[in-house]
Image 1 (cartoon, helix red, strand yellow):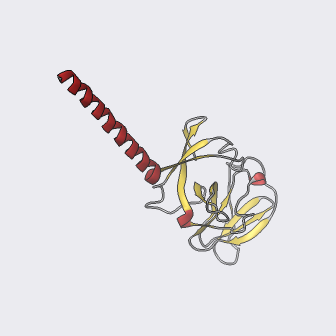
Image 2 (cartoon, helix red, strand yellow):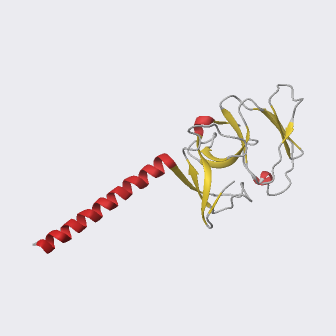
Length: 181
């Protein structure tokens, strides 16, 4: 009987470990991490088609999203779709793209435009768009592969509200491991 009890005790201990692992995994997935697979080339060369990434859901618990952050969010034109883009325009700013160069300002008259330095772009962007006045509580998003990105410039609903931002993209786990800047 003692051998039978030992086997039952071992089975119960393994069952407890598996149940706890399942609960912890689900809590991490629901409250801490969000995973996604990159479906298009709109974020190349930073993120490539097929890359798998983790987003950190708690990144904005004590701070606001910043320009340059790569984030996952509900696509404003179809909230059932998750998008990954880079934050370009902040609440209250005006964004204008002239000959592929991005300028931002928030003084109301455009006299103090700042040219964004974007060393992460795949290629030299082309085209002129805007100006776009980013509403309070919203963000203007663009892909790093500007010439092949479906982003705020082309959406019907141009801006992403802060509450629709799910997380900051933080780590690539496939095909290679590494933090994302």
